[in-house]
Length: 426
Image 1 (cartoon, rainbow, N blue to C red):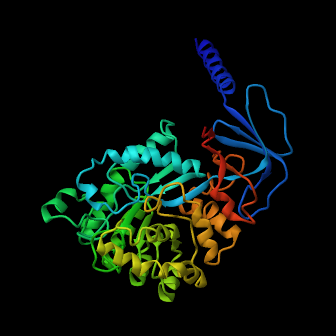
Image 2 (cartoon, rainbow, N blue to C red):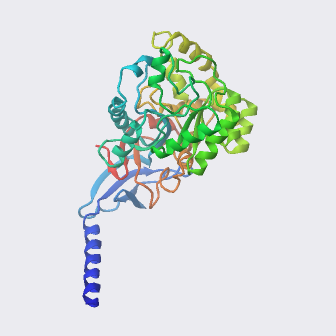
Image 3 (cartoon, rainbow, N blue to C red):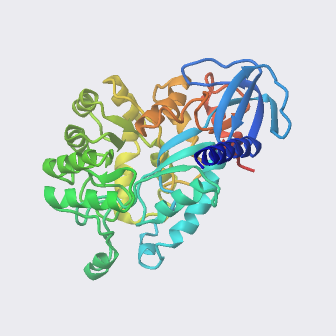
């Protein structure tokens, strides 16, 4: 009896092994040049073998295609890792119609998000960090793209942002009773309540905790852009998130709000508009990373004077756009590390790669700008062993462009071919 069970087990194991081999999905990519890492160089012609969503090998020259494999022949293209945008809002499109919060169902955000997820992927961004959305909308998109039901990038999702009552991230601009109905449920006052809301966010599916550490530009709340949370509240948020294995990203414009967030242990500062030497040095000392979202400032400036925004928002936009023209320069002068993020949704999705040119305008080299959207961004997500470079065992997140992004990173504004998790975006 024992020998029969052993034989049956062996047969089952061999059948499973054979089935796995027989149904493995392999793609052979012939590339004219390969950039495996932003720190490396562009190769000559090469063959990348992808099986079941993973890179198996990268070999010199054009190797023959095994029987049953799919061939992608791109002898005139440069192939490189898929790009990472650390700050997007897939469930929203640009505009100043804040009143839509009162008339559109949250479920509509999933429909909008499905559209924008595909647009973002086709622009070459195979991983994004969703930086704030209505409850569950980005989580639904995350599952949809992971299961292949929606064409889009890998999504690391925050869900609703934590905010102070009446601050940026909460609802304002309506009658009090309407504001109360529309609030996300993630406002908090005091360290204890803020800790509870972090735990609630984790319970409901957040991959990362998003907070609005200072006032914001596009909200109807007009009382300045400095710190909203107290130091104790922000420390409670950071400590609680850490206990759950989560990182915190903080929307922050004002210098003292940036400094306070960094001191509290928050991992990334989003925007960083008014960063000064003191705030930058605090970030450097604490290892806090800046995600500057320069495209957000470009996008909102394009709507000035056109009736897109309310008067209170127009005033805030005018106070920030010129200052933002040097924020990366100021941060880098003090050694702050820069990671790529755009705030897509504030401007039209699909324009994400225009951020590269703006980073160059503020002193970053082509290589540094590319790294910010690959290896550096992967590190921010804690996924540096999975994405951000091309290597055996890594996820097959691959794009192809004409030209060499190491010498002209703006070629990434025109992506010709995309693969995410081993699947070609047809």
